[in-house]
Length: 537
Image (cartoon, rainbow, N blue to C red; front, side, top):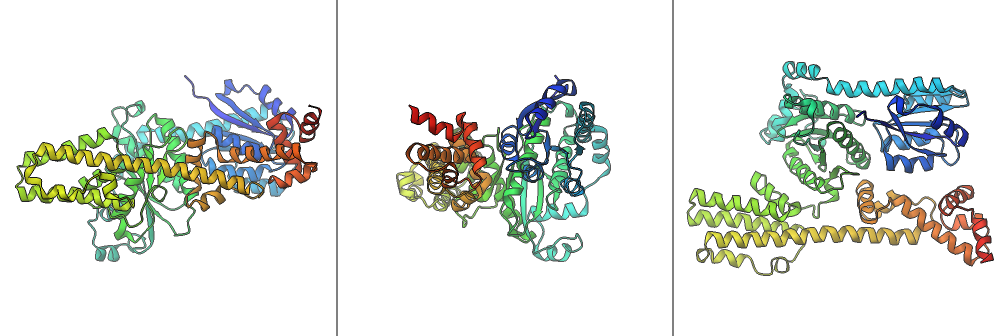
């Protein structure tokens, strides 16, 4: 079945919108209209909801012009194509459109045939981009010819913890890297190839195709080194401390969404905090893995990527570098009871198979119990309350317990801690949403109130706050704020004699005409008619 690309139409003139909607053979072109809007503000809401592939917009519109809309929409949908049209032949419009990387610029009036030709050209360009990523022959040639570069090998040694600080200092300049710069690591888990049929028999090329796509799209935002490391595609990002992480996470989320949609494999990502210097990359790698582990639990209809700062409960958490301890830490935080049971069964089977001495057995278990206590401390929990006993006393009587009894006890303690963490995470998310709702009720009168203001007050990134708000309430923050303002407007219409422009100002709308537009769209009649109707009841 042919895949239809989604198109969003924006023009303040209904006749033009309807003309484009009914005179263009959309289905024959492999396109489908996902929505229409009469201004940039309404279009932003539709773009966030439908994620259109192609956006066709006028420039001159009320409330928000087309060029301003494009600037905002590109941050949300960096992979979408934009077609702009205008009835004004002004050089500065065309110049601004070029600077925004608009695909096509049309002057009114234009014929249906002209628009069809532009749409065909735009779709072909999108197909070419897609085909380039799927060009198996090209990928095969690159796979055979492009051996790992010295720069990549150096970064892999830093990431693995094999490079000494002295060698990093000596070699980083030769590879055009700053040894003491601030870096973050971004990990992409690329799935298991069950559905990417076009790579069947050439599985190694699948990772290369994603690596190239990630590198290309991230390069639109910042310099990056992207390479394959084990089962991950890894991007090394030189990030200043004041870098806009929200913008980066939206970009990463769109990358994951596009790769998942094209290949049928669910791709998720995790971003670490910035670390000072290449020698700290192993620590950043562990953070990125923690963030990635959380991404598996996200609602992947909307969000695919996690920034570690959004889920870390304590900044002084020390994560051991050993693989087994890191794996257990991740399971304690985000794993299921079954995952924990399987992991603990493996641990105790290993003890049994290796026939450890009692002393070695004691040390090995103390290491695992200490890890439990370290995780408890990082969340500021009371160990006695979580475990319902003093667990160090158990260590003192190891010689009185069988291996099976100790395994059952350890599984019970891990399960108790896992449940406490998951309940805490759920409660903290609900608490944040409740506070956000309270802040809206307190500050809805402020016309500049935004999702960024609320998320900053909650000490969360706007991307993460937007995700948990929609998951908890079933609607976007903007929709919730609009409903609250309109509810207050209705109250004033029914209980006061204030003019419409006064009510608009009191409920957070600096533009009375836009207030009337939003009110009528929501209730089906203007504020004045609503008041008149209530008075006659």
